[in-house]
Amino acid sequence: MMKQTTAIGAAIGIAAMLAGCAFNPESMPVGQKDTAVYIDAGAPKTLTTQESKAKVAVVTSVGGYKGYEQMAEALDSSLNAKLAGFSFFEVVDRKSQAALIKDAAASAADPTEIDVSGVESDFVVVARIASLVVQQNGPIYSFEVVFDFKWISKATQRVIMTESIKPPTRSANSQFDLGAALNRAAEIAARDFCAKIAVKYAPPARVLQTRGDGAAARISIGKNYGVVEGAKVCFYEIIDNSDVGGAKRDMNDIAMGEVKRVEANTAWVEVENADKTNVRKGVYVRVIEQTRGWGSSLIESSGFGETLGR
Image (cartoon, rainbow, N blue to C red; front, side, top):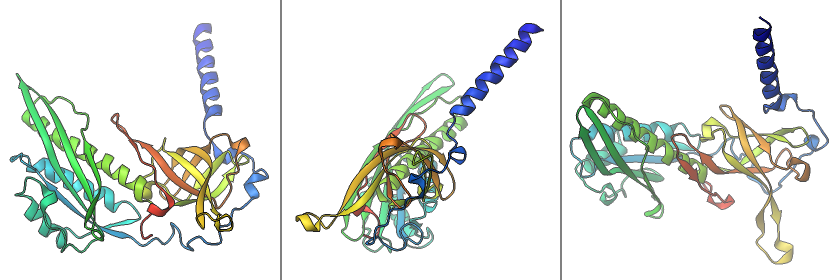
């Protein structure tokens, strides 16, 4: 009985220690830095609160792999759902313009050859099954699949981003399980591609508040902008260099941080080296790295001038 009591006490002690180490901004005191405010007189008045949404059309294709239309449909559905979930995109109605291209692309080996000039959108995503190998060993099926993605700007008619994603896969015990695994692979690839898009095109966020003398910062983007726990962010100010002959407005990085808690429209970030930095309410934030599940790491740096509508 004594041993059991001791074990329980030790477990409670360890749990308390871990809880004490947990990131808990609400328990942090409000210090002198937390009352300071950064003001950028030349900043857009709305920033992330009233950003105009860019229209996106999605085109998917089985490529040269006939008989796998269900996987292409899973790719299409996942892309549409993820892009529609971002606050800065509006997905074109699939029953209108996007549906027209989707039907045309269904018979094409390479959907990038489809004419998208008539599509009423700002961007077009084209995705296809680039390669697929399915093997059967007795009742067990295994496969490898690669998906190609292209992000096209309608304004310039140029492909501005390409990505090939090979999602991790698992074996299947039947043809039915194989179909489900193929669909899951398509969903993972679409999710990872959308995470990369989110990092590149999300408008700059702002710090809404800090706690612990700048050790914790709540930022103005969250799940609505595709932010995930573990994402790396950079805090920066805008400086005016016109008096020294440089660019009139430029970014001045002041700190790095890691997202610890994500909510619908906001996120809490742990600021690195907070005692040596000056993160305060009003400074800008950009996501520079997001690590997704399933062993996939997506890294993309996004500059101030690369945001939508600019």
